[in-house]
Image 1 (cartoon, helix red, strand yellow):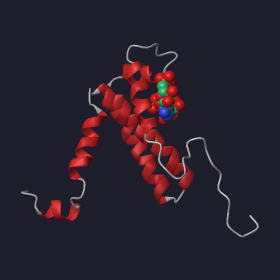
Image 2 (cartoon, protein in one colour; image 1 turned 45 degrees about the vertical axis):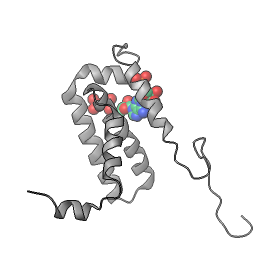
Image 3 (cartoon, rainbow, N blue to C red; image 1 turned 90 degrees about the vertical axis):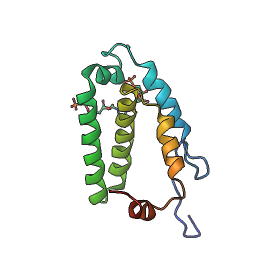
Length: 124
Ligand SMILES: N=c1c2ncn([C@@H]3O[C@H](COP(=O)(O)OP(=O)(O)OP(=O)(O)O)[C@@H](O)[C@H]3O)c2ncn1[C@@H]1O[C@H](COP(=O)(O)O)[C@@H](O)[C@H]1O
């Protein structure tokens, strides 16, 4: 740009700097819809069919890949691996019958309470 500012590449999810959290809601609905679907055409159905151990393993693997990308200061990899981690975590939640709303409610209850204070007040 002539004035020296660097231009940014916009993606279809860019909404003036706002995060499109609705994509998570849509993903929850899609994942739920894959229960009992054909594993040859659905990765989610295939993963659900492999069982809890495999899903837990994928969450662990993706978490490690997030950590590696962060330490390597590879921002693109950090974005990709974070998306993989969230996706696999949500498949695990679906299999466990966990409602993502309960996780959000737990974060909501913690809102405004410093982790430092919480730790100080722990009984054990
Ligand atoms: N967000 C995702 C998503 N992110 C990652 N992945 C898949 O996750 C897999 C991870 O790859 P890996 O190499 O780690 O795993 P793998 O080789 O299958 O497994 P291993 O046995 O080797 O561990 C890849 O196949 C990715 O395509 C996803 N697959 C699906 N979704 C969403 O889920 C929806 C439903 O997908 P289907 O069930 O396939 O229709 C899609 O429309 C998307 O919105």
